[in-house]
Image (cartoon, rainbow, N blue to C red; front, side):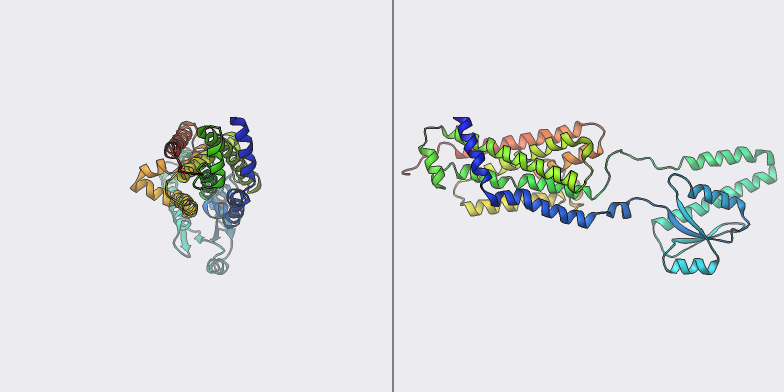
Length: 376
């Protein structure tokens, strides 16, 4: 009897085109807008690139030439050097084609067009070059034989100033919007969850009246409906993740099976939340749909779907909320896979989703069971 009810629940769920629009088509459209808005921003803004500078008066300074060439030809060059006269360099600085002008001489000097992180790095570079040059000059006067050893020491000191990544994962800040987009799809499963209890209560729908007259136990019928909606929502989550990874090309392929697992559990959480909302007494269907839509959007907003930094702010003020916010838990499960080298935090997020789903289901059954009607 359970399988019979499950079969027809799957068929009836697929026929509701409006629900499938919000679960499948709307996130696809929104994801396309996200991709158009954020495409290339991380590479162009967040990722460091060589700083363009002009060098003036270095024609006869072979040491400076050699040093700048080695920097420019390294695997991760700090500078992109152009040799020119002062007038050309000043014009390029005004046009913002370069960040600064380095003047060669007994000591290097620097002219910049504004204040920024890049110009601060340039200033530090010039100061370090002048300090090292002064040390080598002093050694040449006092003990010329020590120059090779001093030069080697200074080179080793410079080599220690290198980038050490804190993680091998995807550090693109804008990826979190796609994580939250998947979380939104999961919570939109609450629309399907609402109709489980609506179609099981005789006073709310004709189908509910027929089910109450059926010899099938109500708990079996509701469980079949719940499992059927879980399966349909899981399929929707698989479609959404596939679209995000293979069409929008968001970097999540390394742990793709685990991404699918987290998305499916997130979808189950969304349906379970809707199951609880639908079981609320004395609340009509339009209001239940409004509660589902509002709660889903508010939870996604607080998870960072619209404002990326809001979750960090909440974590400072009320860290407990991010631990129970279903949207934050779902999106954080993807973040844990991307950033951390082990699966400890990821497993905690999955366990949290299971617990939240279980609480919603238990409350939904507790509120919905044992209802009696004077007439049908």
